[in-house]
Length: 309
Image 1 (cartoon, rainbow, N blue to C red):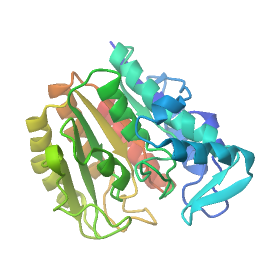
Image 2 (cartoon, rainbow, N blue to C red):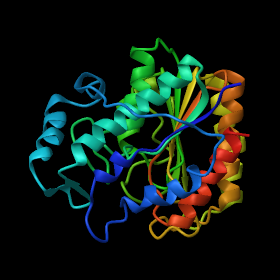
Image 3 (cartoon, one colour):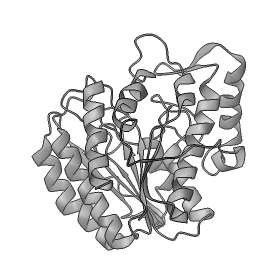
Image 4 (cartoon, one colour):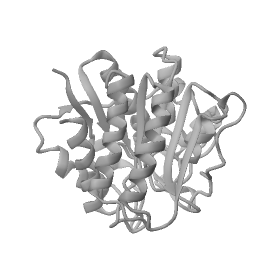
């Protein structure tokens, strides 16, 4: 019986963001405390994405810009998004780990995967890094499923407290990738209004669930059990990718929301149920935000208890 796979790699720690930055290597060390003792999980080694694979969604100029950081000790793409000499390698490994997770699920070696990369990805746009993100890991994964794996319908569900502007923009005019996001609004990065539903062929294939500050488990439950479940049922995805940010946790210093472990369990259950109904259980979670270590651990535990049960 296939089990749940996890991707956690020391090389992701080499993306150094500097003292005091919330997206620090210590986040993954906190997660390691959860996944390392669990002997039921299948350890999967990530691989480096190729330039061609990253280029499924990013421009050559952007890829070159990230590559050039190898020759520098430190620097910034923008005020929020620092890099170090190890950042480019970590970014290619983060994208490649996403693709390896997909390949492992597609092959049947594992039932599902939780991938824990750094840097995160959902804010990265086609031609620039932003919001702690260098390459858009989940968007690369979705395009890989469409272009390389022959999928016709891929759902990307984003549970991070911040709207995934980059992911939405990649697929805004398309009907083969359904982007769903629950997030605080108005909030960084400024996108994600309810009225943003797609354009052209993509109209109706973007669903934003914007929540006020201090939204709690009950607020999210209504949205997920009604709107998200219905949208996935109508779309019938062949594969589900989840941008799993845990910064809506009540303890998080950046989120300003009131989601608990119970709330993250409910979200994971809703998405896992849809995967079992429509995609043969094929679902991959990929880490985005989450900056309180205890909140991060509780969110990860909530997901693993659902998909590994």
